[in-house]
Length: 314
Image 1 (spheres, rainbow, N blue to C red):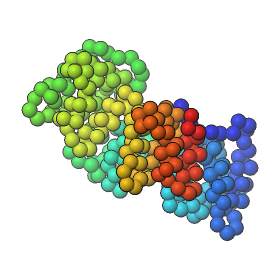
Image 2: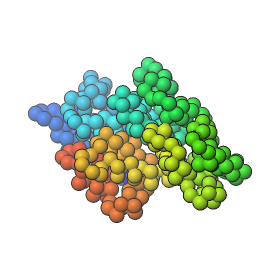
Image 3: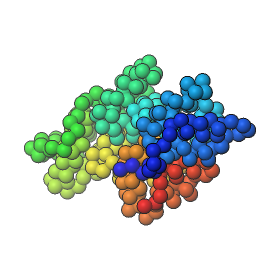
Image 4: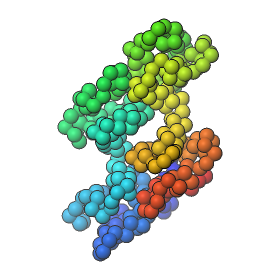
């Protein structure tokens, strides 16, 4: 459920483009006007604005925005102006290059198979290499094996569940992990990369019934590092993606300093999908509204832009 607030009356793309051009003219940029327009337009409206701007002013809008804006506001606005699949491709590539392997893992392991297939095509077109090539280059070990399997397998996206398979998978995971000395990581990789979200949630429920606790506990006990993080991301998104992203946002803002890269990526990529649910989960778990948390961790035009995307507290 989107948190994006767009005008109720039809908006003229030509008017938006003219207002943006006016905001860019003269000394300095009228960032308030830019935020006022772009933070309140949906994906198709933003695409139309980009398309209309260039022939009128002989310049790409993204190029002009990167000249007029700076810092974290520039990062957030430029990511927002891309379509969802391009945003994912850009986010994964930038995370891999910056050695932010948790960030790359978060994007890959929280997306559906169809989302992955689309952003893989964009990735190849944008960077001239396929995603698998870069995953082999930037990642390693069981973490690499899991990511490669996860981006390659076309999983079922429906809600039907095979209870017999869930029972067998729960037993397989127990034997591969808690029951033995050492861990058979390949068994975890196979099940976590091949099962649908609904099926994996059923496996977790069955595991809980059979062994008295969630697979999460087994993962934390039997695996570590980025491999554990990838498995937990897949499992949490199978159960409740909004709750998972509420946790990611909390981690980005707690303690000294703020992980703005993560804050921008999660807010921008989830606004038009499930941000209202994320806001509800955040408040439920942390007894503070996400809007208040972002307000206290950011400042200036950057803060104004993120808060405009998030919308009101309730």
